[in-house]
Amino acid sequence: MNREAIVYYLPGCPYSTRLRVALTLRRVPFRSVRFRDDEEGLPGSARSTAATSCRPRCGSATRGCRTRPRRRSPRPWPRRLDRFRKSWWHGRVTEAWWKSAVVYQIYPRSFSDSDGDGIGDLRGIEERLDYLSALGVDVLWLSPVYPSPQDDAGYDISDYQDIDPVFGTLDDFDRLLAGVHARGMKLIMDLVVNHTSDEHPWFREHRDWYWWRPPRAGMAGGEPGAEPTNWRSFFSGPTWEYDPASGEYYLHLFSRKQPDLNWENPEVRAAVHAMMRWWLDRGVDGFRMDVINMISKDPALPDGPGGDGSAHYLCGPRIHEFLQEMHREVFAGRPRKLLTVGEMPGVTTDQARLFTDPARAEVDMVFQFEHVNVDHGPSKWDLKPLDLVALKAVMNRWQSGLADVGWNSLYWNNHDQPRVASRYGDGSPLSAKALGTVLHLHRGTPYVYQGEELGMTNAPFDSIADFRDIESLNHYAEAGPDALPALRARGRDNARTPMQWDASPHAGFTTGEPWIAVNPNHKEINAVEAVADPDSVFHHYRKLIDLRHTEPCVVHGDFTLLMPDDPQVYAFTRAHDGVELLVLANLSAEPARVDVDPAWLDAEVVLATLPDERSAVLRPWESRVYRR
Ligand code: ISL
Image (tube, rainbow, N blue to C red; front, side):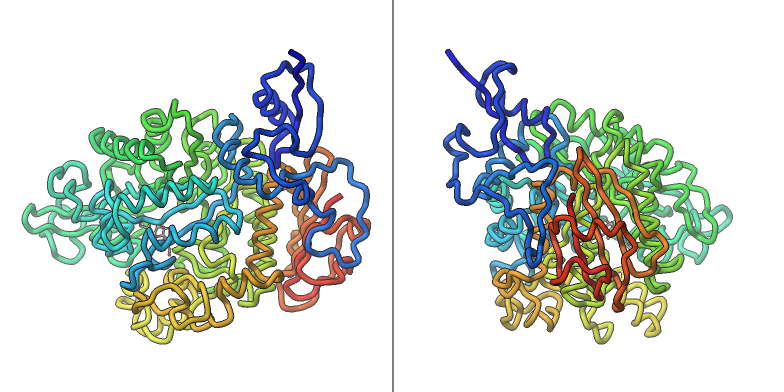
């Protein structure tokens, strides 16, 4: 039989992989390969009309765009094929699929409430899947939905293998997962196994699964200063809670209702592995691992300088062993392609190279914190203005640190961070776009936190009665009313106000009374307005996500920071396989001159947020991407 293979342009994958796909599709030998960039010959389910199959030569900013001939002009798969690309393609290739993926974090309490109790839920998320699909994201990460006393908004889990009734049922979960997969997306769960809730049966039934210690020598349990170590908790106060019944203290790095599991005990590890396998067997696509670099502690639990015990619990002596064991016990040999990302406060680039080196089989990527620590002092409540030069230096160090081994995650926002549009921007849509441009053009996997794609801002919290988060409430209890300005700027509740769906009284989030007030600016900043406005932050994010899917240089390109000492301009290039991208953003409220090779300003404009995109002066918060 006379067969031939056709090689299609597959966004974000190298030629060798495209070849493999083509050969697999057509089951033909390598020598009879012909190249084409349309869809004829694809499996029937993957066909679409030719009318949609061509990407414009210039992106949104076509005004005055003098397109130059490109060295290589791959054409993306048509939009209607994107679903096919994600579901079929991601499931089969051996390459790290998540390198060209974008993850969207959902904070379920605040996303969408289907039953009017004022708290978001799984059915609410299901109702919004088409919105997420339209944005183009590949993976959804769900913050915890497990049964929990909600002392730390669900990060205190009392049963790892069920759903909290406030969020729904396991059946709801299965339906949501099926809906996610049907749209060609994946779903990862939050894995919180440094600690459980004190209401988890494990805490009652397995005392030796936790860290118990007697009072400090010579002191009576419960008296001030009798704690076994001087460590301070992340949520204020000591990390030890006294248990009068046993006369001992248990360790909790976070709230007293979050006792730390003792991973030295092999039974703990086996129980966690079994639970993780249970979720993977149910069909989830991986895990975001909460403070996973805290699971190995120095068993001596020594005092730390000034109450800072972090040297004894961050990246402790057995951390790599524990993660490699987890990989062997949970992930190895599974046919489906999964994603693991470890949240790692205090992690350095050298440590991250070890954690994310694929040869070591630990995690795919980590969340580091250095770039969200540049605007405060030793305490997060100790406010400092953003130093852009320092921010660029940190990001640059992570780009080069993981350039040849490992992989970066990229984020500005999550449920613990204030909104970036207010924090590093000025609250305007233009600044939200500029920050999005900068982040999404770095090398790594970008994470979008719900509402970031709308340019949602910090909330105008008036008094302490407006806050809900244990971290803020405990800090206020300790520091008093003087703490309010810092709580307003840095409080985690800024990220947790309800998703702004429309201009109606509760922003379309709930028909009931929301658990935390909606931001009054939902009348202007909301999804309905944003989707309808082609110039919105939403559509800018959609284009950025699309660019990652269609331009291999965004995924694989080498990163070079330009103008490192400029206090206003964030500029860098990416280079891959004969293609170069230049990213320019003015992250300030004043015009700024760019100091780059002038020939760049004649190159193809891929994205631009203001007209006249060939000027050497960037207007306040303007951003552009060029290609040559
Ligand atoms: O939020 C923080 C600073 O304000 C961090 O210190 C945060 O506590 C740290 O990044 C760990 O976060 C994770 O674990 C916590 C939980 O409260 C956070 O929501 C979660 O992201 C304990 O589970």
